Amino acid sequence: MNHRKTLEPMWWGLFSAGGVVAAFLIPIHIVLLGLAIPLGWLPGSAEIFQSWIVRLYLFVLISLPLYHWAHRFSFTMSDLGLRPIRKPLAILCYGSAIAGTVVTAWVLLRI
Amino acid sequence: MTRNRPDPSLLFHPRMPGNWWLRKRTYFLFIVREFTSVFIAAYLIVFLVQLYQLGNGPGAYQAFMGQFASPGWIGFHAVALAFAIYHSLTWFYTTSIVIPLRIGAMVAPRYVFTLLNVAVWLAVSAAILAIYLIW
Image 1 (cartoon, each protein chain N blue to C red):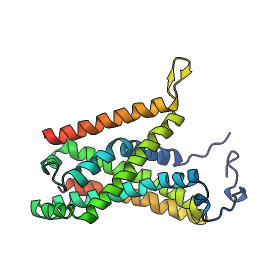
Image 2: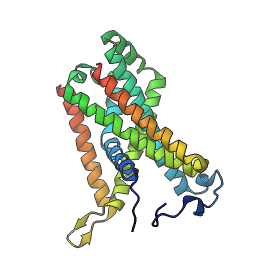
Image 3: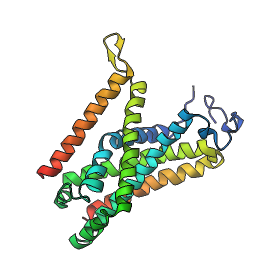
Image 4: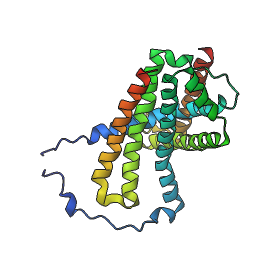
């Protein structure tokens, strides 16, 4: 059997890893940074972001779910009628996730 | 072209009407589940802007964070949170189908695996909250 090598397993792997990160970690960050601190329930301190370990963690937290989005969005839009342009759509989605990864690294490095 | 993959142009793709996902509750919930990723990505972009403002100095960061108390931003975060929680629950349930939990020869019911994941999720969330408060 002649198997063609594709990048598909890598995209599925990133989708899956992003799904796990989003499922376990995103809700508490929205509660904390989007609701509890702005509403004054908890004190707001930005000191924690100075830590390199925290920034490395944030790099994983932000970048992986972007690939999760790229995979799901590209497949869902295809299911919703964009199948004829699924190739350029996939390039746009995964390309955005790669760009997002670079921007995330840049933002975290300049804090 | 390989022997094990047929020519994509020769595959049959049924033509679906644009509103197929509105025809059944399960189809609709499937689309909602898929679109949770859009809200999570939107939240992450907002979070990135927040971190970018932090890089611009304490003044810029405080000014940006001050806006988050407005009803619009609270509403945005509340909606994003609802979709994020829906993603968590559906992700744990889907994982229980993909990776069945085996205890000896027995396969545990899906809800057991889902509930175990929910317990871990709550513990991890509590730990992150504690780390932030202790810092």
